[in-house]
Amino acid sequence: MVEPEPMLKGMLLARELRALGHDVEVLTGFPNYPGGVLYPGYPLRPIRTDVIDGIRVTRAPLYPSHSKSALGRILNYVSFGAAAALLGSLKRKSFDVAYVYHPPLTVGMAAVLIGLVRKMPFVYDIQDLWPDTLESTGMMSNRHALALVACACRVVYKRAAAIIAQSPGFESRLLERGVPREKLHMVYNWCDETALAPKESEATMPPGMEGRFNIVFAGNMGPAQALDAVLLAARDAHAADPRIQFVFVGNGVQVAKLQALSESLELGKAVMFLPRMPITEVSHVLQAADVLLVHLRDDPLFSITVPSKTQAYLFSGKPILMAVHGDAANLVNQAGAAICAEPENAESIARAAVSLAAMPREDLLDMGRRGKEFYEKNLSVKVGIARLVTLLEQACNWKSRKGAHCSIEKSPAAAEPSQARPGGMRR
Image (cartoon, rainbow, N blue to C red; front, side, top):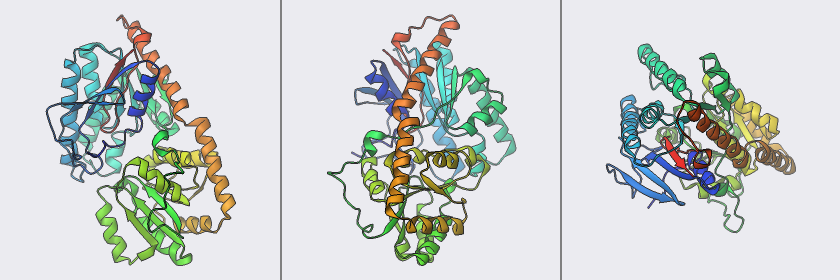
């Protein structure tokens, strides 16, 4: 059986809360991200219950899709939202508070309905700004539809007991949209430290990476990543220094297109594609890398986004080639762990790659060490969990202020982020 999609934030939160003595349950969907195809061993059913690390995980049915089709995505989001709202409302067990991971918006709408039925507050963790992301990625362009999504967002924001922004830019944008200052909190993401921790006894150099200067991109490959520009950069960087190789690890709707472009450009040893793999195997690739790449489209929205791979890269202790403007660049510059390039600018990216390849090895190691130290001090699971537990306890108090009984000792909440679901927990 293939393991479910990475549960970076919600499931790690659930594990940590359980370790603190809280009773946690997760409500999520059937794993189908990022390919939009159900994982082997997870046939679609009306409901499925698993136990992962002692945590009860209920899976609600959905329409599996992660294609370019707006209709497919909408069916995926709406089907899960409706099923989650129904299952969450009918659960016999009571919960004090829920942690809800966005996107998609339908998860927040489900949380609103569940909260009204069960008189339960929720903490809303915003990882993508809607409708901004829908418009920027081309998934939705109709102005009336975008306005309707914005209206639904305001409803969810109003009902949430607390809202988490993943970057300073998100925080500022939400304040501009009327979210009360006292409801809004900025908490950086963390990474799956256990899975990504270097395991020297198991470390192996992936075939094809030996003797090369490897610049690795690991993660989803879709329109937002705009990796066609990186392929052009790989061609130019390899021409300047034949040791340089760009390695792409993962899956996504653009993979076939990128592979075809690579062939048409006759990139040969300038690039290598590796299939999607469990995160424990990804850690081997990251440790074999000389530099790790972050790249997103040159879009104003992404200047206030910190891609989640940023934290994983910092934790891995490797230098970073950051081709994203704004908050993400500011973060790695603050850490002293990166060289920055212009997104979607092949010349700039190639120039940064050649510069990194020319650096003394000790300088590269120092960049990686600084990034690791910065992560441990500011972005680690320990730091993030402490902030989230406080917010969940405050949300429980918010319920008390509303006139309903709530015992702090009997709660907080969590959700598994693969489909970004409302979840609840007790102690």
